[in-house]
Image 1: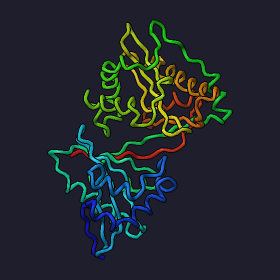
Image 2 (image 1 turned 60 degrees about the vertical axis):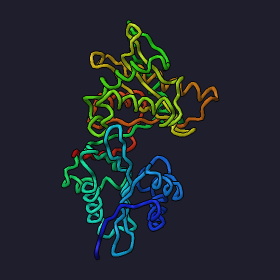
Image 3 (image 1 turned 30 degrees about the vertical axis):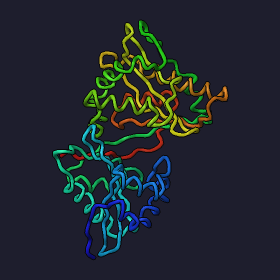
Image 4 (image 1 turned 135 degrees about the vertical axis):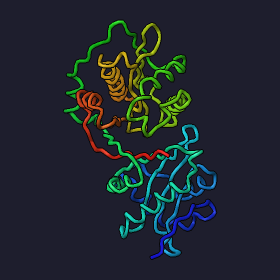
Length: 323
């Protein structure tokens, strides 16, 4: 065997059609993606437009594996989407060669971080990727199923203290800039900032908020997205969106440091989930599941979700490499 790795261009994408379509068929079942990825023609177009990038590992002249990634210029990060091979033969060796090539092909003057959520079976490679200097963070995915009577009972019976001297409001664009500052203060020192550098700057947090409010991460549920105000200044937030007509997501929840340990997160989460349930009962939404992701080491967050009827579904490793 003579392995070699090359960057893939749009005009040569036809060479890896079989590999990509094999990945496409396994994205949900094997890799735990929530939705199926774009089809091959759309993938090829994204390559040509520079929206996606890929490395291909050849066994002699035969394409055997792909590594797909995108580049986020705003936080100088490579977002590694997936590593996929047609066969399990020499899988660790092939993954190692692709990771090594990605690092070597990257200019550290332009990129400072590689972020890699190792979903599904990719997590089995976590113990090998550390030899390249990758660090690991465990993430937990929680789900609230609206047809789960136990979860609904826990949610209904959970009493959360209404914050005194704070005003509850639904999301409005007039709070946009103050919310950017709040998100930065709430997340800049968290585990999330280790692999998502946008939380380290106001410009990055503005990008996060824009993607939530401009429906990039899914259709924003403004009716179920709340803020708590102290003298008209936001101090806590909980956003909600639709990943699909049947699935709602809590993409971001947090508060200013001096307001932690006051139960604000639980209060806002109950408002958001309660609103979604109400809209389902009214026939205005078709949601059957609400999900959220949190760092497994964040015990307070884990307790918050469980206390409101969410159930931990799966955990995965999020690895990151700093240049």
